[in-house]
Image 1 (cartoon, rainbow, N blue to C red):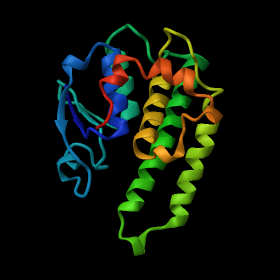
Image 2: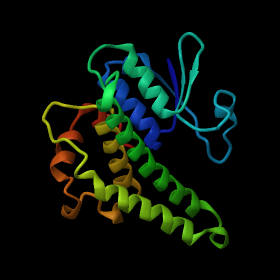
Image 3: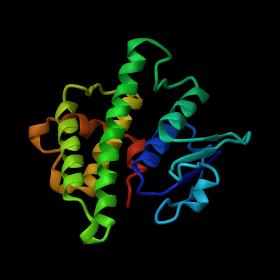
Length: 199
């Protein structure tokens, strides 16, 4: 399998963390690809011009990160990162959606700041920042501090928090007021997250 990726993409990091948790990282060949400023090399596989893109061994192309994560989870029986059915499944998918929303908002701020100053929208940046603040504010009640349990929801949120720490350290999402320190200390030590820290 080949993964079109960029080392600083949080969506790619989520996929790579899942692959590591599932024991599949040795089967994943990383192919450097960047959607900015020109997604041509990606668009031939994904018309949306976004990464990650997974090129499966049988020629199937999968995108984007939620689909790839679910596919990787289906390849081996242990550990189960996404339950097959019921509310447990939907809770984890909802956590992933929350994490992806945080990352979407963060990426939108980064892209807005890359525009010429006269074209930047402070209103768009403020709106994205309010999304991040609201989402981070609900995380404490959503996250487990179990020593052993890990699932796609926990991994996705960890990647989102890591992305905020990487791109927006001034937000101090690990400050005591958010109550995430104990959870972060446990989950950020996992090899899947240590190995994929963006540089």
